[in-house]
Amino acid sequence: MTTLGPRRVHPAEILPWLALAALPWIAPDHVLLGSQIAILALFALSLDLLVGHAGLVSLGHAAFFGLGAYAAALLALHGWSEPLTGLAAGGLVAGLAAALVAPLVVRVHGLAQLMVTLGLGLMLHEAASRARVLTGGDDGLSGFDLSPVLGLFPFDLYGFTAYGYALAVLAAGFLFYTRLAASPFGYALRGLKQNPARMAALGTDGRRRLIQGFVVAAVLAGIAGALLAQTTQSVALESLSFHRSAEVLIVLCLGGTGGRYGGLVGALVYMAARDWLSALSPHYWTGWLGAAMMLTVLVVPGGLGGVARRLHGRLPRLHRATGTRVAAGGES
Amino acid sequence: MTAALASEGLSVSFGSLHAVSGVDLVLPAGARHALIGPNGAGKTTFVSLLTGALAPDRGRVRLHGEDITRASVPARVKRGLGRTFQVTSLFPEMTAFEAVALALAERDGLTWRCLRPLARRGRRDEAAEILGRLGALPQAGRPLGTLAYGQQRVMEIALALAGRPRVLLLDEPAAGVPAGESTRLFEVLETLPADLALLFIEHDMHLVRRFARTVTVMAGGAVLAEGSPAEVAADPAVREAYLGRRRA
Ligand SMILES: Nc1ncnc2c1ncn2[C@@H]1O[C@H](COP(=O)(O)OP(=O)(O)O)[C@@H](O)[C@H]1O
Ligand SMILES: [Mg+2]
Image 1: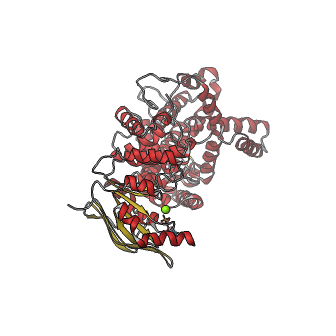
Image 2: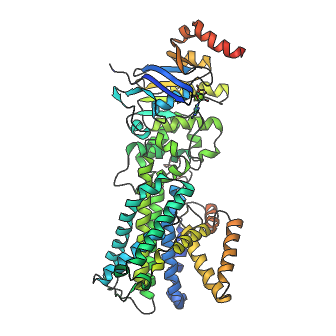
């Protein structure tokens, strides 16, 4: 008879995914851009677990993206070329690092939290730039090969496999995010954002729950980073830079926080706008991008994904009032 | 038998203000105990000391005999101590149903199956049962932030009940609720398990007389009197405290 916070999946939601899957046939020369969008969307989705759900802020989320990227690249450089285990390694390394710093991050709030995450990100960036032996410093890492995905799909020069791989991982991350948002864990994170004192009165150890949330988000970011390293077969120092932390925050603001399409819409719009504006005005495109960003935030404060959600709200809902579903029936 | 909840010499000061000083209180299982006293008497502060939201300067708190003076808020909740807030404190963006289901999930703790939906069957039924008992089913699907004030007060109780507490502390559950509705709110409390120890802060003496079996009167941070509603109402010191205030 009613909805649960995170909206139920509507059958029509398959359409954008079908469109994405058809990209290599519709616009084969755009698959590279498509891969970048998929990776950025996954990265933004991971940040949204912090910003949109747990109510944490971060200016250093690229640290985990970069760690994942380097972990996957190093693994491949040292002869382990199977891609899926490389992804897992990226997530694992990022998650371990997050578990180390999370207690520090969730201790503080607001501006102090921005500073802590920013500081951690800058320190890691500096460390990576000095550890040339391991990271290649400013040159980054490249020259590694990956074996075919699932042993079936070799990476090709046109980037078709890379695109399919990135899209599949994004879809998996998207499903994970959707389930998490509808789970007690997701609700607890939002509960901590809306009213931490009440969560304590429900018996929740808020700090511990936020640490868990931070680690989960970092794992997802690490997977996104590993995906970038694998699909481009290189890692640059830039992957854990402040610039990238800021970029993903912009993407999330564009797309809107707290909804499952925010990251995807944001990444799509951001990359398309960047592509288009840089062709239109090679020198001044960042200025135009800035103007476009401000306009979005002013005109649609909830982000572009919020517009999609409002439209979605008008569609008739799956399992509407099916008798047995007492009071606000299931997500199932 | 050990008391469900007991405080011994509980005290806290804010600067030079002795907000709570040396309060002893014993709640046996099944208690229906009212805590009254003029505004600023220290009632809410006392409840915060019991729940762990505030740390005392002196004294102890025992829950079922166990010293919980140093335990955190969530740790006390896990041991069966529930509370509601004087100032409504809910999750504005969650529906009534979601909030209760979340409270149930938190009571049961995270498991490895934590990715299953919040609203799965067992929990759905239990949440519906709690909302139904409080007459809140019609609002189940509405965000708490959009509910009428009286309905939000009911939800305060619903969230506390979801934790299945053995001791429940209600800080002015009917504050700001129209007179007719507040009686109904208290009637709901009569349906609580008989062995639950209930402490409620309430200003309306009619409600206190009707629903409390014991009353503690606080003034200036200390206990002024304790006894049955009739005894307390007849106590000269109590009359003095209230009349003194009225004159001021
Ligand atoms: N956090 C605080 N800091 C300073 N003074 C406080 C604080 N909380 C309560 N007080 C003061 O302590 C006294 C008791 O307050 P309170 O417990 O809210 O009274 P009651 O609930 O009986 O009306 C009041 O004088 C109040 O102003
Ligand atoms: Mg009070």
